[in-house]
Length: 208
Image (cartoon, rainbow, N blue to C red):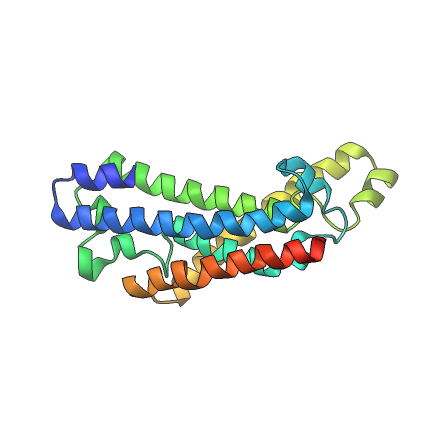
């Protein structure tokens, strides 16, 4: 969508921003996928429900796969075009990036998609690494109160974790300046992807 939108603007700066965004997404999706592979090797399932169920109590995956979590978090920032990875729309070099020629509702759809992407990536981070709907004392609440009460608190716990990650996105945006584009690509291809592959190998040896 970003690539087509930048090309359809008939503006060379928008097109450059769209090319940057597309190459950035391809680069960081590779590292993101590899970081999840190590987690799936450990859990033995592709089901988000089962991954959440396995993290009952304090058995959160972030404690067992901290490197995988860190790589996934950095890639999530890059995938959502948040600072310091907002190279596709940096003001001084490319005017406004791929949405330079858009306004009103079309601009609103771009921004809505970006914030929806933030919510989805926060939900994935919460489910994959921070126990999903699990919270300390969940089994005690289910035994002494009721299953429904425990489930309602679990839903609230999941949304609190999601909101915590969204706040973290905003916090980083206020704090950290953006990279240069060559630094962005260097981080993706020469640091995160080798780290992800090393994490898969280490996880494989630990499982054996």
